[in-house]
Each structure stands twice: as structure tokens, then as C-alpha cells.
Image (cartoon, rainbow, N blue to C red; front, top):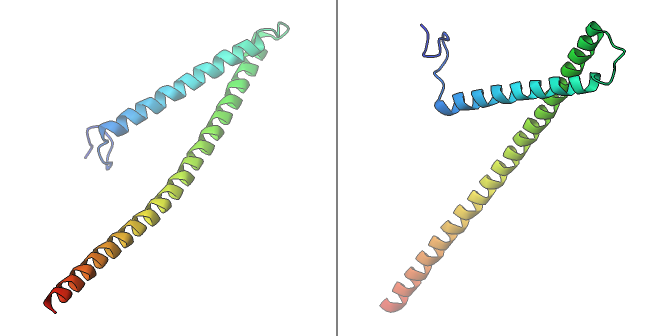
Length: 122
């Protein structure tokens, strides 16, 4: 059985997931186009290169640029995961403190109410 996307056994993607995938694809294509443009600009002043040599240098330049782009993106993604873990930890500690202070406040108010009631009875 296949889903709407035509893949067997996979969950259907959400619209946000599809948008993210399309955005990633477009960013990738833009990065490739930019690398090709830079490669052409790099080989342009090298007039002594043959056509085959020029194509080889440009292909190599594009591959190197894309490897560097992937490494940069991986570093950013790793840092995002680190920050997310750090913020989740801070949030959990802050939430625990807020709950503790709220419980302490309610307990204090209840104690004051009981003391007030006890004082009025005597």
C-alpha cells in the first residue's frame, strides 16, 4: 500500500514538513548554482586551461564548495541541537522552581487561613 506521496510504509507528511523539504531543496539548488558561478569566476582568468581542464577544475571546485557547505550546515545543526538541549534543561529547572514556589505559596496561604480560623475560635 502506498500513501499520497507514493511511498510504501511511510507516514504521510505534514504540510509544514513538505514546505521544509521544498525549502531545503531550493536552498541546496541555490548553493549548487552559487558554487558553479564561483567556479566559473575562478577559472575565467586561467586562459591557458583547455576546455576539459577547465571543466575538471570547475567540477572539483563545486565539489569542494559543497563539502564545505555541508560541513558548515552540520556544525550549525549540531549547535542548534546543543542549544535546544540546554534551553530544555533550563526550562525544566525553571518550571520545577515555579511549581515549588506555587506549592509553597498555597501551603503558606492555607497555613495562614488555618491560623486565622484558629485565632477567631479562641
